[in-house]
Image (cartoon, rainbow, N blue to C red; front, side, top):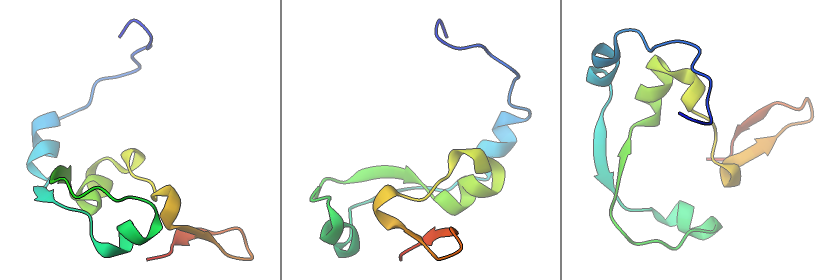
Length: 77
């Protein structure tokens, strides 16, 4: 907190947490084909759930972006 200026509290944080789905996973072959070679089991929240309740936390992975002629950024996968 010494490097941040708090602007507001998150309203109803427990309600938000109850809307999130957590799971264990390993990287699939699509991700491994780009850059990552990690076989370690990880823990994650489902991005679609996070995007529904806190959209400012979600963005496309850098390796999964493509830009069309109109400068719209979308997912390659």
